[in-house]
Structure formats: structure tokens, C-alpha cells
Image (tube, rainbow over all chains, first blue to last red):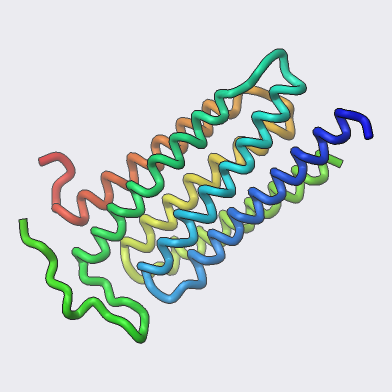
Length: 115
Length: 89
């Protein structure tokens, strides 16, 4: 197999896997029953998805472009750092507003800490 | 072959944008809407990266980086506002 064909296959697989992960994350966002489970889809699957697509872009640009292309990893590093922080703040806000959980468990006994 | 794969990936990303948009319109609470908006930001950054890959252009990643940063700042500011009633105390 020629080297450029192999590169095309690898990049295509990475892009497709990343897009499928993003779709699964958004599907979880739409289908999950309450806000605390809905946080899972975008914060995990979408992070993996965009990371995979950025690896594909870095590979392709490194082999086809003028030189080594590593600035894509800046976006993946940024997203990998900031997504947990945003999810944590969203979960704190949801508990502060006393949003109900799904059927089967509740947050009734929880007292929000007063500061 | 690669261009077909990128087209399929763009279609999948468009479908995930549509699902997040549905949650944005339906969301029972404002927290769900913020979460859907965050997902929209991340997915559109991914879509810009894939589109730049399709064009073979190196410029789109800066727009994707900007969108990712603005999405994070929006999420943090909105949830801080909902928790505290104020953004900067």
C-alpha cells in the first residue's frame, strides 16, 4: 500500500470515529432523563470526538502541509482542560436551583451549603 | 475516498448540531439550555476543523480555537450568574 493511501485511510477513520462520538454525545444530551445524566454525553463523548478529529487534522496537515503541524493539539488541550470545569459549574448551578433527578433517586435530602 | 469520509463526518456533525438544537429549544430548565449551547459551541468548532481538513486549508483552526474559548467563557459566566446572581463578586 502506498504511504499516502495509508495516511488517507488513517485520517478518514479518525474523522469518522470523532464525528460518531460527537453524534453519540449529542444523542445522550437529547435522550437522557434528567440534567445530571445529560451532563455526561457532551462532557465525555464530545471531548473524545473533537480530540480524534483534531488528531486527524494534525496528521493530515503534518504530512501534506509545509511542515510539522502541532497547533491543533492546542485546541484539544484547551477543551480537555475546560470541559470538566464547565461541567462542574453547570452541575453546581443545577443543584443550586434544586433541579429534580430522574425517577428512582432524588436530591431531597441534600442541603446546599450556605456560604 | 478521504473526501467522501469527510462529507459523511460533516453530515454526522450536522446531525449532532440538530440534536443539540432540539435540546436547546425543548430544555425544561435554563441549565439544559446552557448545556445545549455548550455542546453547540464544541460541535461547531469540530465542524470548522473538519471543514478546514476538507479544503486542505490551515486557517480554520484559529476560528475553531476562538469558538472553543468563547464557549467555555459563556458556560462559566452563565452558570456563575445562575449560582450566585452575579458574575464577578
